[in-house]
Image (tube, rainbow, N blue to C red):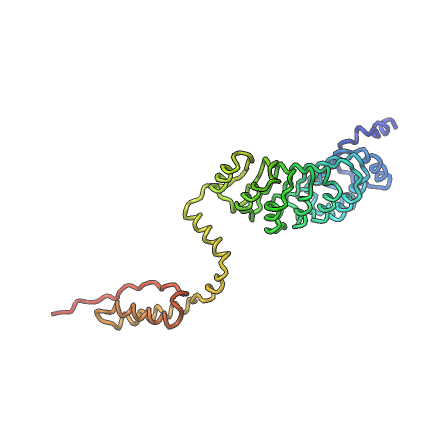
Amino acid sequence: MQWYFIASDPLLWRTVDLSSLHSKIFNPKTASTLMARLKACRNFTLKQPPNLTQEHVAALLHFLAASPLLECLYLQSLGSLLNSHSLEQHFRMSQSRCLMHIDLSHSPVTTPAVVALMDRHRGTLRTLDLSNTAVGDGTLRAVSMAKVLHTLDISSCSSVSRTSIRNFLCKRFPGCLVTLSLRRLREVKITWLYDLLKLPTSSNLKTLNVEGCERLTLADLKELQMVCEGRVVITHDAKEEDDSIGAYRRYIEFLSTDPSLPQRLGEHPNEEEIKKELAAMGKAGSSSGGGGNTAGSRSGSGSSGSSSSPTSRPTPPSLPAPSQDKPSN
């Protein structure tokens, strides 16, 4: 009985980590005890619990919503144990007046849960980790309304569209952000980062992580760092690229924006047509005597012009001139 009263001390429930909980017992008495004890909780952690179910996690979130002192909530790598709807309900019913740190990385979090979080705690939230989650475009719109958000991590959020990322960086960037992580967001372009640093709201930004952003080259990032004059520390893993590779990459990007590309590809001769033309050129070259090479090229060019427009079709490779024996005296 003495241990029971000792365990009831609210000071012992300020920090709770149930990640290593092995008990499968979750009866009504346990639930009522947790509901009473978690009201004093300030820091709660749950990471890959081995024996809890989705119903257990939902119950814990329900109990935590009654805590007026909750400051930190770490729900990492929960997989199917976390129901995004339960998390949304937790944020909507939360009585916490000082929720500051949220880590939902590697969990099946969706946009409605983040919207509910920002609606309720935009005035207190300081750090938010959404890396490797399934959040969508509405998440960045909600985050842009933050008042005191210091650190944001949206690394590997593959469900966020290219347009949403661009609008967030170039138009809706919250002026309170100091640290931003965009790791492995492949759509990020160097022009977006230039636009970001031009925004008045980016004046507080001190750290930017763009590791794994494949469109950013080392030369681009070096130039960007010179422009920002060391105001922002940029972390990256870009490497030197060969000039020919860089030119090829820029050419491919140009083709992706060329509206006439599909039409030009449709007019490209197929393999069978090329074979027929080469065969015709070969016959013409064999039938012509000493001037066979010249006649063969004229015949080939005439055949090519009759079957397709010369501007839309590549010039076929030239054939070697047929061998000719010297006439005997």
